[in-house]
Length: 155
Figure 1 (cartoon, one colour):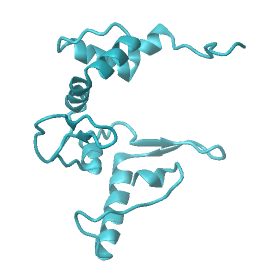
Figure 2 (cartoon, rainbow, N blue to C red):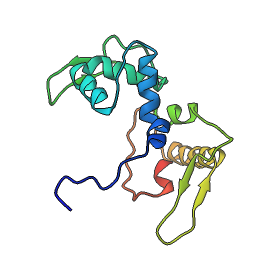
Figure 3 (cartoon, rainbow, N blue to C red):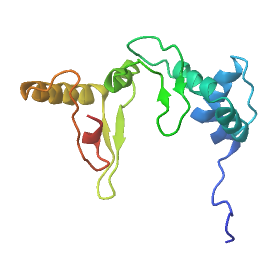
């Protein structure tokens, strides 16, 4: 094998079903025609504010207030993205809740596939929130955990 040889290329059917293809079609419906991934990448780096604004709209995020600009400062490091806006990660995850599908599928190398429902994760999240509240954690406090890539990490 030569350096730079492709190990795998997705089939046209796989590409057609990809989330990135769905996003490109969504953009096309809003007047941004991008033929392929390289065109999307080029557009994203040449139109950085429009790109991030489009992602915000595409994912239909729940947020505290409407932003006035997607990027207040281009200085790196120190860029200011969506200034003044607050997001709640859990709120955005559960806003897309679909009880007809599993919320999480987990497979460790040494175990069978485990499926977690939205109700499972919601209940675990409620229990963890209650414990944190009982320990005096309030809105605005930061809680940090160092976990491996396991289901409990999403809670």
